Image 1 (spheres, rainbow, N blue to C red):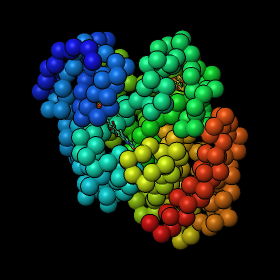
Image 2 (cartoon, rainbow, N blue to C red; image 1 turned 60 degrees about the vertical axis):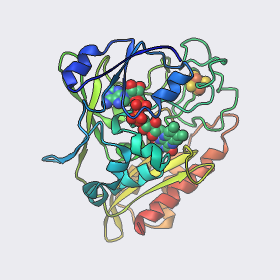
Image 3 (cartoon, helix red, strand yellow; image 1 turned 90 degrees about the vertical axis):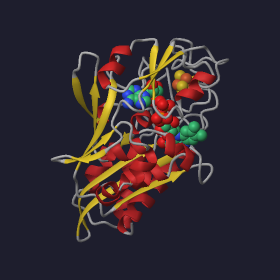
Length: 325
Ligand SMILES: Cc1cc2nc3c(=O)[nH]c(=O)nc-3n(C[C@H](O)[C@H](O)[C@H](O)COP(=O)(O)OP(=O)(O)OC[C@H]3O[C@@H](n4cnc5c(N)ncnc54)[C@H](O)[C@@H]3O)c2cc1C
Ligand code: SF4
């Protein structure tokens, strides 16, 4: 690991003043420290933001504001989150391990990097780690990689579970930059597809930080589910995951939300399937039809064709679980 300077900031303006291209923030450190040990991230200085940013979950006029330093465990176990946004709790609890969730922050979870094996193997080409070096996964070991939204330059997937729930619930990411400017970025526009710039995972403005996440109250609290399919029952990233939420009137679907992890470079919304479900009866036949719409046109890679049927099953299971949460 390369030597680095370390400092702590107690105020946002102080932390932002220290930020430049060679400085990185450290929150829980559960991803960044691993990247530094492997010389994938080589910051000259680290700014500890654990006492800079809010670790509070606070009500707002429209819903809830989650400070970027709220730890994953605290978020999953918060009484208001469990009552009003249970999908968030379910997704977090499907991820990592209790110890990691105790350390991991909300902001860090959004910014964690892909788990593509070649990204972590510095002896192999990887456009995300080293632009224009090539993509080892596209014709290599790509079992865990994308089946939609990828490019010739990168077929990696975003690894977060929390982000899949936040995508389904149309969360907003609040950012603040060096000049003090704040921005509210709709969740669907926060993470990026790889295109020709796979080194960029998201649209966080340069030298800015994530201040908080905002959730708007909705009618999905009663009927929602998170289904994660993985190699082990715990401590493993998703092969595919599905966050499903239904707003029901009797057994009629007023509105549906469907998002997936493990399938694309960003949490992926199945908008066409959601639209199909609107106004339909909540039953197995319609859930299967929605799943078929979602998987139509997917383009698996050489080693991950199994994900397509797995996804279909996960969507149907998640929708079914929404009826008996
Ligand atoms: C073994 C293992 C298994 C895991 N399994 C899962 C899983 O199944 N599902 C899942 O979702 N996750 C999983 N994770 C990932 C874990 O959830 C993330 O590592 C964690 O959420 C990152 O949060 P952190 O606070 O530790 O981030 P850090 O490691 O501190 O930071 C990550 C990145 O975010 C930046 N950063 C952090 N906070 C801010 C901010 N507020 N503003 C700007 N930049 C910021 C840092 O500079 C860094 O670049 C796993 C991790 C490990 C090690
Ligand atoms: S898929 Fe992306 S992260 Fe993986 S080797 Fe290719 S460029 Fe690197």
